[in-house]
Length: 474
Image (cartoon, rainbow, N blue to C red; front, side, top):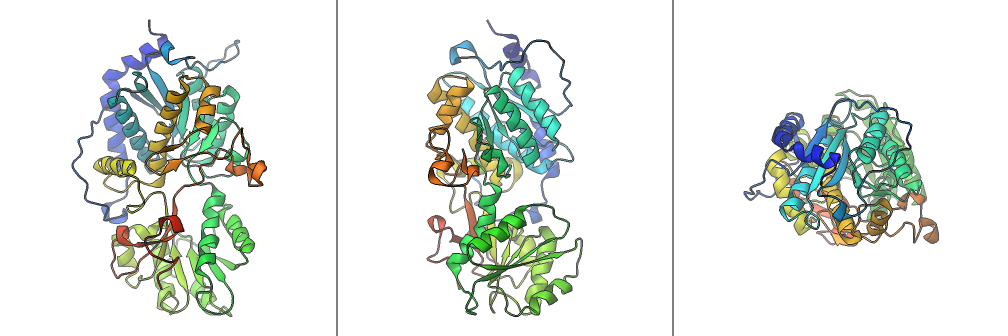
């Protein structure tokens, strides 16, 4: 005998195809143009990927919560035998002012994972049902959606979460009901530093990202041979992110002198910033350009035109904009030697399962998956693996199983070294490492040939992923 939730989920099959096609159509509308996407992924093999999932529901309308005098309780079935369908919840930004492109990319990844699991028999013969709610980058909507997933939809676990504020709102609710939540994108250190038993993160924390430049530059050393290691940082004056503060602290901890300057955007003339660099007593070994898109490329081009660059004495480091091949080489034709940060697997570092996912993802979005797409895909598999090993849908049992995770998925081999049985304090590490996957691929690549395709760029850092013998090709 099916309960009401199961009947509701299964009765939605007739609407599945239209909802899923709508998501794919919106994703296509919001994705970057071909010229703006990272180019030159391996030519995809023809893979037949069904456009319908066993059960998928996407909720984008505001939710009204009815008051009740009864104390709320999570309604996930206690055992696998007590249900016919296992529900996985997701919270993503699928409407403005949220990051819709990221939300739909993650929805594609989640649905691919669910479809694959169901096509292989589900979990112990039970199909997965994916129910996604739109956070619209609003914490209150995320909080309400999390309660709805736990109390009404009977989700065994929740995945996704792109923005830190919406992730924290969801984490607070998930913790109160003992429901596991796997964060696939949000970076705020506090999400895991609270040491909630239920919260796991497989995206890099903000501190992990901010430590990248200092760790890499320490290995490069004194590039310009002036007797010290120094760095320049250029960011948007309107940015209120704490990232730069953590970045400066990381440089200081590594005994690297750092000079931070800001620029006003939008702008096409960065001569004042270039002049400040030129008049420095000693040029930095590396300049980290934290701008995005065309602004980053214009600034780099003007720095190079002033005679500052890797061919002289200063390395120039871009964010992901540098991997958007056609746009990069058109904007910076003298970009040979440029170093570019990449978060998430890249063609030479991806696992076999990740390659399979990238091919399927490319059929829909025509590009290499973003880090958050890889993480969203893996999050479903992590939860499915935990349910299989626990033999239960109850939160406490799933938390224990997640802590014991040891499995290779699309982004790499997952383990969670710090948690209930071994807290971060035991090794004197930062509390943010609680249930934090420590092996997120945070890479530096370098263009070593003129007009080089991005997927052929040398991986220079970290050591475990290098395709060359040093942290820099000189």
